[in-house]
Length: 205
Image 1 (cartoon, rainbow, N blue to C red):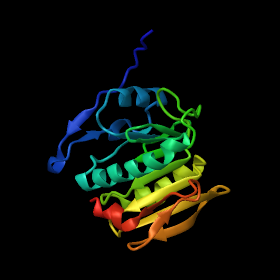
Image 2: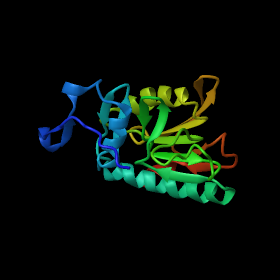
Image 3: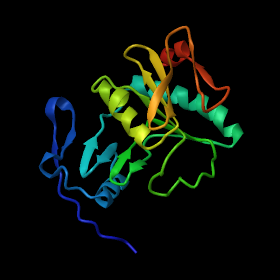
Image 4: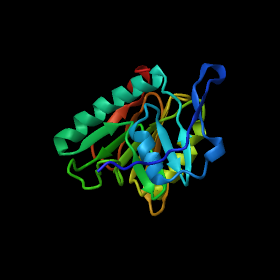
């Protein structure tokens, strides 16, 4: 049975040719179900935090080229071992009333029951490619979010300084497995034997 969910009207604005959704008048008032209904029918990537909807910028080609390259590497390693790799848009619940859309996610078991139809309840590994409009969102805010969600490993791929930071969850916080630079290979602790050439990742852009 269809559920009729009333979603407050949004006003579209276009400052500097960058179309965004004007949500300020009703921020903090959105429900989780309204967020889910909106993202079910939106081409924009939206995240949700305690009643507020966050509109993510449209990825630039550089971002997407790096994402495509990493996706192929993770799939080639994870799939033969029974896992699954997907890329955004895909809603991952951090906790009730908080959702993020990582650039790339990995589950080591393709039959993991955290794969719900509308959103996932968790992942084993998340990857974010840093955007130049708000670097701290990926390097600090989401670092805290993914630790809160108890995601065992978080990769921060940063085209701004050509580094890949691999974070491993210890207790309730991440520690750095390493900050890998050009000429080095970034390696995973969770996926034993998996590594990527930093040079090749950023050559993809």
